[in-house]
Image (cartoon, rainbow, N blue to C red):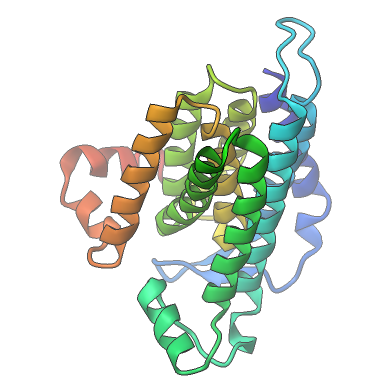
Length: 266
């Protein structure tokens, strides 16, 4: 489990080094409490460090992430993290603000650019670059790019309550564990900061949620074609649904989902 160890180590180093020296990274969460966005930076650092470690052969099993998949992961994760940083910290500098794809496109029709639209474009570009590396033919490259971009967006949609995004990312990563060592990295990074997330002290923010979603998306490209098609179809349906309904409301009104969502919170 070198990938898990690398991700946790990267997150811990960021937590005790760079992350605690950053002023202005506090936001108000859904409950009106102050929460730090440095959890996202720590997670991104863990993802990058873990990816580099996963590219090395495991001394026990000999497994390692391939060079093309590792490069694709770094490209997608860095693009998503950078895009998320823009939305987290530079949103007020844009001429307009929007919510959801309809809001961003509506602003664009008026000739105004939103941070969310720029973020979407940056994540899409990173996903296309990553998909070109993971796919073996044009159809698979397009499918992989869609999977990476949709995964990045979906995990971000879940980052509305403490620990929710990390829990779902962890479950999805477990599904890809037999296919690639990179899934270990996604799992390790998601779990590394989950305690502070559940306690409402830190959150992923767009930077962390988009980064872990993109990283997870690349890991999922190692699954069989049928599984990838099913994942893309499901993510498209969920993304479309998010424009019409509140995931938080659905979770709250569904006992099983509500219990899972509340698990571990203070």
